[in-house]
Length: 451
Ligand SMILES: Cc1cc2nc3c(=O)[nH]c(=O)nc-3n(C[C@H](O)[C@H](O)[C@H](O)COP(=O)(O)OP(=O)(O)OC[C@H]3O[C@@H](n4cnc5c(N)ncnc54)[C@H](O)[C@@H]3O)c2cc1C
Image 1 (cartoon, protein in one colour):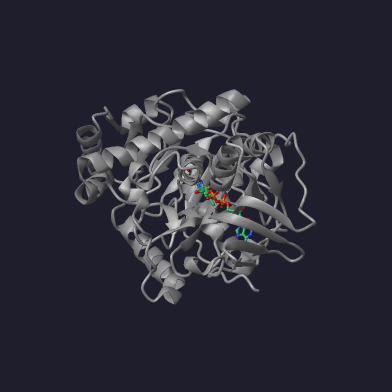
Image 2: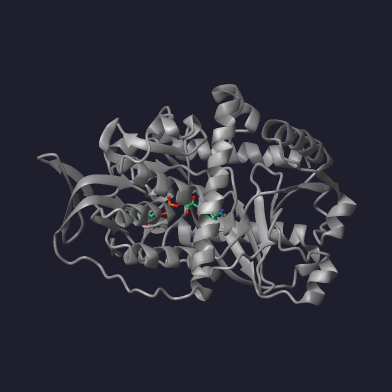
C-alpha cells in the first residue's frame, strides 16, 4: 500500500538524511540496532522512533512488556533528531486564559504542571546520561518583542502568566536586553521565562534509544510500516519484507504521520515545515560587535516566529516557519528568505556563513493542543501527536504517559483534559495545504503590520 501524505514525498524519504549540525556533531549510539529481517511478534508495536515512541517503549520495556519500535529511517531521522533543542514548555497554541476558559483554573494548572513535569523528566534523563545543558541553569528562555505594540502585548502576557500561574516573569526594556547580551535593532524589549533548558536533540535521542534497548525493547530502523490491519484481534503491521504482529499499537509519527497508517489519522493532523540554519562558530569578538552574547533560548513575538540560540561553540542556530510543502525547490527559496531574516536581526553577522541548513515537519491539529489517548476509544490502539512545534519535553512526557496508560498505572482522567480531549478532523480536510498557505499569507501581513 502507498503511504498517503499531504506534503511533498521527498520530505518523508527516510533515505535522505538532514544536513543538520546535530547529525554532524552527535555522539554515536552505544548500540547498533539493525532492521528486523523476519516476521516478529510482540505485545506492543510502536510506529515511529522519536521522543514519543522511544519514551513509550522504554517505559513499557522497563515493566517487562515485549515491545518493538518500527522506525522508517534511522533513530532520530524525524523531528526529534532535527529540532532546535529548546526543552521548553507549551506544545499548545492556546493562551493560558483560553485554556482557563475551557477547562477552568484547575485545568490550566494541570496542563502547565504536565509541561513542567515533562521538562524535569528530560532534565533528569539527561543528567543521568551526562548530556549537558546548553543554556543558563534557570530562566533559560527569552521571548523578545519585534515591535513596540508587541512589547505591550508581552506586558499583558506577563501579567497573565503571573496571575494564573503565580510565577514571577518580568518585562525587560530594550536597554535591559542589551545588558544581558541580547542586542538587536529588531527587538524592543523582552521577557525571561523561568522554564526549560537547551540541549543537543540528537544526543538526547540517541541516549534514549540506547537506554530503550538496555531496557529490553527491540528497535528496528529502516522499517517503514505500509499497512496496519487486524486479524483475530491482533494488529498486523506490514513492511516491504516482513510483518510485525502485536496485541496493541502506538502511533508515534507526529508531523510524519500518513493519512492511512492507520486510517484514523486521515484529516486529523496538519503537518507544517519548520526550518533551521546554523552558522559557523561566531568568535567572541564578533558576538560582542553585534551585542549578542547570551545563550538564552530565544524566540520572537511574530506569529511566524523565529527561534534561535547561540550554541556552546559559538554557532548561531536560527529557525523559522513559512515554507509549505517540503518540496526541495521551494525549500531552497525559503532558506534564502530565512537567511535574509537572520541578517535583518543580526546585521553585524551578515558575513558569517551559514554552515548547515535543514527542515522538518511539526504537527498541528484543530484543537491547537497535543492529543494523547486511545484511537476510536479502542484500548488496544493509542496515539500521541500534534505538539505544535514544542515536543522535546512534551513528546517525551506523552510517550511515558502512553506507556503508563497501557500498563494501567494511570487512567485518562488523571491527565490534563486539554491533552486528552479528542482531536477532530479538519473540515474539508483535503484543503489543509491551502489552509496553511492562506494562514501563512495572513500571518506575514499581520507580522509586518505590527512591526
Ligand atoms: C525544525 C524543527 C525544529 C523544532 N524545534 C523544536 C524545539 O526547539 N523545541 C521543541 O520542543 N520542539 C521542537 N520541534 C518539535 C519536536 O521536534 C517534535 O514535536 C518532536 O520531536 C515530536 O516527536 P515524535 O517522536 O512525536 O515525532 P518525530 O520525532 O517526528 O518522529 C516520528 C517518526 O515516525 C517515523 N514514521 C513516520 N511514518 C512511519 C511509518 N509508516 N513507519 C515507520 N516509521 C514512520 C518517522 O520516520 C519519524 O522518525 C521542532 C521540530 C522541527 C521539525
